[in-house]
Image 1 (tube, rainbow, N blue to C red):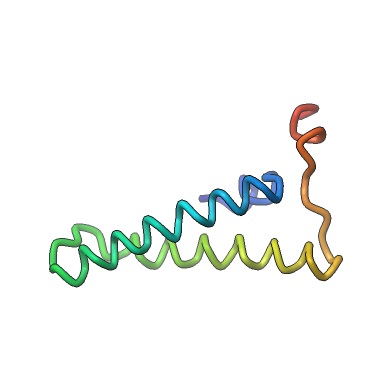
Image 2 (tube, helix red, strand yellow):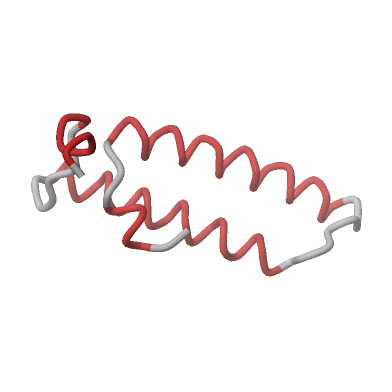
Length: 76
């Protein structure tokens, strides 16, 4: 997922996206343990996306960044 797309999401959307990515990461790890993983690079990409989302959420928590609100998303 591109950084510009992640930065435009609201807090609720970020939390939802993180949950989906963590579930996908779990499934890929299970495939990896069963030696059925087709694309091992996908693990790294998902981990980085989760880290990006966590960073944005933490910056918002510390007051360094203001995340988009649902009203702002409708305007764009």
